[in-house]
Length: 492
Ligand code: NAD
Image 1 (cartoon, helix red, strand yellow):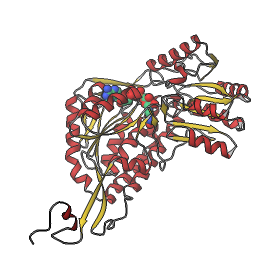
Image 2 (cartoon, protein in one colour):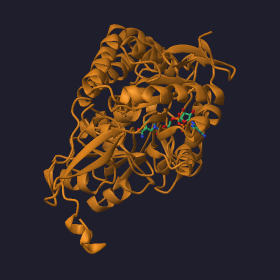
Image 3 (cartoon, helix red, strand yellow):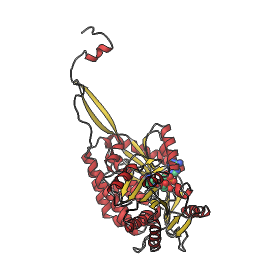
Image 4 (tube, protein in one colour):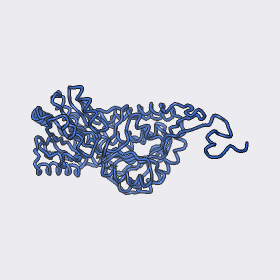
């Protein structure tokens, strides 16, 4: 049994009862920990509030040094991070060790640099009589809530910009996958984060999540998760007039024009749809393919999906791991079954393989209606739907025809088409001739019901600061010229 909470620089047992963290690949218990109650959340927020004055007035260089040291400590046990992440989230070890962990460490390095690079408008006398300067100030205690699909990366995307900008934070990971976030908190303290700057509370959404969002001393709520829960988060944060940052669901289109490199598109579609077993908010989910190459695309994707190796997540030969839980497996299977009942065709997969844990086979679906559940809503599994189109305008209209707008890709060798697609597709990120790659320097975040606010990059850093205008009179006059508009010039 481990504590489950990291409050004020140390491991603390929660008073919300015991919870088993399990490995979705075989259902085995990895760790038992205690969950947070509302009282534990309160203690964490109090610790963060107490740490705020000193941390927000630390020099940027001091904050930067702590972040660099965190990156160094994480690098020293990168393999352990990858193994724990793989076990708790059901990720193939290749994905955890080549994507999740190095990406997280690179993020820490980026924000260590960003901490020393605040930007603002020119300080000058805009009206000739006052010197204006802009201060970028930390906001206070940030309450952050993260999902289970990329536990370590999501914790980093929440914590790093907040702390680099001088805020203190209470972060709630999903109770299904808290272990690498707790390792991160331990390393942050060892790296010199003062007590209370970064607190982790492991608890359920209903208890710990609600208590955190509603806490009076939390000034900003930063949430990554489903659009359904995001709506509830917005409601609570709005009631407390808290600053809000929402990274929600996605349903990324993958548009293949007639002139595309077909082999590149086929490989891109399979990789983009199956990354993290499709449990990726930017995963390719809807392939719209020009009718002249549609059947070749479908045949190529089905053939490549068939070669994907499902297996134990600690085996380097495994391509695809399980879904996060049996409940998620049943949800995915149910959506595919309903699509078939409504007339769609399964061209590959569509089965629960004979393996322990919560696996689902790579699945390609055709002949679904544009307005059907499987095309419109998040499946969050290894399922790609392919549909044909005839004109460029039709392709863009179909791509934009869901409530989401997180990410998209367009595949073409025509530079004009590439530019038009990147302009017309309504999404926070449009890839041209690729799908998925991300970098610490560039923003990630949605349009429409995929939320608002950006993770990573300097855009994210700015979100965790508030802008203050300082206006300083430089005339030294007792009677300012503008006073004439209020009262006549009388007296000395
Ligand atoms: P979820 O919305 O069910 O849960 C996310 C987090 O919210 C968890 O920590 C959960 O405990 C908490 N929560 C649940 N109910 C709550 C409540 N009432 N109050 C406060 N907190 C509550 O999402 P999930 O199933 O963990 O993750 C998958 C979802 O996350 C998908 O929709 C995916 O698209 C989305 N996601 C989005 C991004 C992005 O950057 N836009 C990144 C990763 C995942």
